[in-house]
Length: 317
Image (cartoon, rainbow, N blue to C red):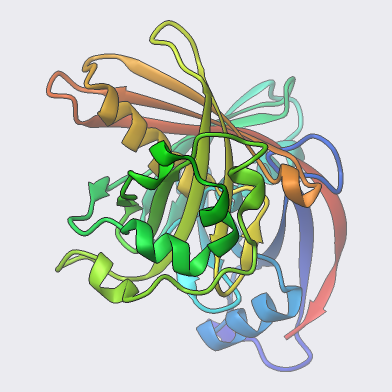
């Protein structure tokens, strides 16, 4: 396999994910890796930094219809095992390029595992059964820590919000999110600062045997909830390194699994519709379904959304 040296050209496409409107949703760059081309991790990280997006995907050319296509996900800082908006964006890009099939089965392989998905060419929506390793860590984030990293939010919090601790939840090993439930959109969620500092003593928040990896702060407000219908939420995801993210599928999956487990209603499918990115002017719509088994554990989780192509071009390696 040949290594890509300076002068090698690679094609790329950008898509806006969890939206059907260009310049809304969460932008994603997908770099196409032809057969026989080897891109090092160092080169991938440099390219991801150049795009300066929350994530960049490196999509390897198919080696056969029955073989899952490999995709590698990089932030501006490191490779990560899984992320939602790169997964949905990549699936929509592949599905949109396949002609003649209204419903397509697609398979991808990321570091976290196999992604089995369907793409509907009529609605342009991809739905993926995603790998998961759900875990609630033993050391929740205390209220005084939130006050330190989000002082303006602290001033707006109701008494009910101040009484809550905020658990750290993993959707897969290495992708961790603090789940901070707030009481209102206009007062509390609007007061969240997108330039927040790192959570104090963040290493101690992750249980032994679990990778520290990424730790984001996911703030959410439940708008309406019923056992008979979809639960609607508004969210914001903040990270001290990348700032605010317009749509975070992995955090949405972690939140949906956390809420489904909290209902204590086994052998049911729980549906969630999550709107994120509103405060950034990049409104995104994320849909998640969680199926619980007879013991109330996570049996299956699916993530769905759309994406729209925005740019195409070539880059030099």
